[in-house]
Image (cartoon, rainbow, N blue to C red; front, side, top):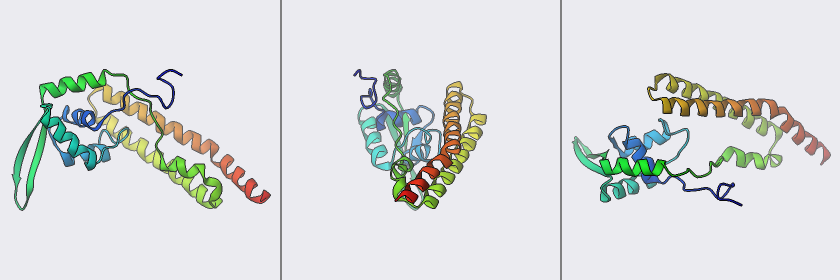
Amino acid sequence: MDNHSFGHGLKQMDAKTLCLGVLSRSDCSGYQIRKEFESGSFAQFQQAGFGSIYPALKRLTDEGLATCVEHQQDSRPDKKVYRITPAGRQALFEAVNEPPGDDRARSDFLFVLCFADLLPVSTVDSLLVERIAHHRRAAAMLKKRAEKTERPTEDFVHRYSIAMHEAAIGFLENSHHELLGTLIRRQVAE
């Protein structure tokens, strides 16, 4: 089995690289970086929490890949704003020139569906209906973002992500009743 096969992916993106990606677009605080992975441009394909962002920012500043400037705030702790350095841009360039790791479907929804036979059919039906609605909302949000982007690469990523959501919608709509029918037949047979 070669290293491109499932489960043997190449290098996965680390938190330092993810932070450099955000900082390559603008100076940000750790909180702003977190927002990019929560509801911003990076939310559709990566996750990063404070537990990985702040240690990564510390390493980036220690390694000279980013700088940090503290801004005083009234009645609050100083706000640390990070900026990518030329060495950081080079590190980002090198990281994105490496072949990416395998994509993985990390999904609580898929995990639950693996055990759908343990659930009432009505619960599975509700899960499927809600997941279709989730994909519709995500596709609509991405379409709005795609209208605002000025970068061809971001436009491509948005369109690719939209296509993935639309494919999921199509699959779930076409297979919804098939799964429910299988579950009902299994319950009747028991």
